[in-house]
Image 1 (cartoon, rainbow, N blue to C red):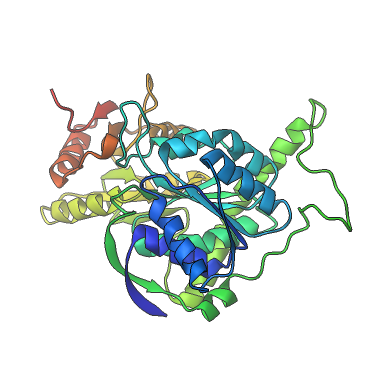
Image 2: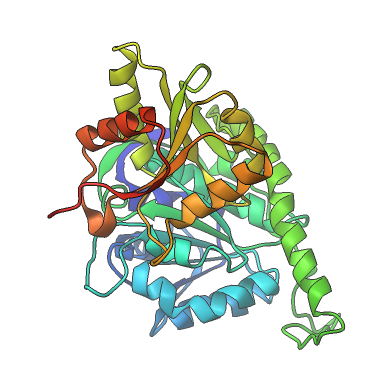
Length: 385
C-alpha cells in the first residue's frame, strides 16, 4: 500500500484500476472527465489491461457497458449531470438485465440555467432507476467504494448495477492524501468476475426479452429483492475490506456524536464533514447535537435511520436537491421511513448548495438553531433576496 496525493476523480480511477475491469466505455463531461482521462493514461502505460471504448455520447457509453456486461465482462463507465440524464433511458435496461456495471457519477447541477458546479439533483432524479446508489464523503472513500462496488454488484444475490456519486468539484477536483492498495491485495479482495447471466454460444439463452402482464411483476419483484439483498452483502463486503486493508466502514449510514444527541442533521456526501465540524463547535457550548450521513440511498437504510433517531427532539434533512413543487427527495425518503416507525418529532427539510453554492458553517449553525425551535417545513438555506 502506498500513499498518494490525489483528487477525488484520480482516487476513483485508481480504485477502478485495482478492480481490473475488462471494458471501460467513456464519454467526457465536466467534472467527470479526469476520471476517464486517468484510466486512459493507465491503459496507455500498460498499468491496466482493458478495452477503452471512446463513444460518441453518454447514451452510447452506458449502451456499450450493457453490451459488454451481457457477454460476461467486468465493465465501468462514468458520467455527470446532463450526461446522466441523457443516458437515463439505459439505466433501467442495465438494472432489469441484472448487469453489475459500476458507474461513477460526478454530482453536478442540471440545466437550465446552465451550471457546471455541484449539487445532487442529477443522481436523485434517477433514484428509482433500479441502481444501487452510494455517496462518498472524501477521496479515500471514493477509491474504496470503487473496489467495493464491483464486489457488491457482482455478488449473485445482488446482480445489480451500482452508481457511486462524488460531489462535483468539492470532491472530484480537490486533493488529499489517499492510501492506494497494492495490486496483489486488491486482487485478493476482489475475485475474478464470473456469471451465468451472459450470452453464450455453448448455452444459448434469451436476454433483453419482452415480459407481459403475466410475468412482468415477478421480474420486477426479483429486481427489488436484488437491491434489498445488497444490505447484507454491503456488510459482508466491508468486513472483508477491513481484513484486507484495515479501513473500517459503517454500512448504509455513518453517525457522528449521535448517542445522546437531541438534535440531528441528516445529510450525504461532502456536506457531512462540514456538519461534523459544526457539531464539534456546538458541543463545546454544551449543545447536544449530532450528524448522520446516508452512505447509501438505495438500498435505503430504514432500520438504521429509525434506530439512530430514537429519543431525539427534532431532525433536519440537509440536501443539495429539490423536487420542484414538493420537497427534497432525500427528505421524502427519510419522512417515509420515520412515518412507518411512528416517529412523531418535528422533521424539517433544508435545501442548500444548489448550483454549487457554498454552505458555510454559519448556515449549518443556523439550521441547528432552527431545529431547537422544533419546526417542520421546507426551507431554502442562504436564499438571496
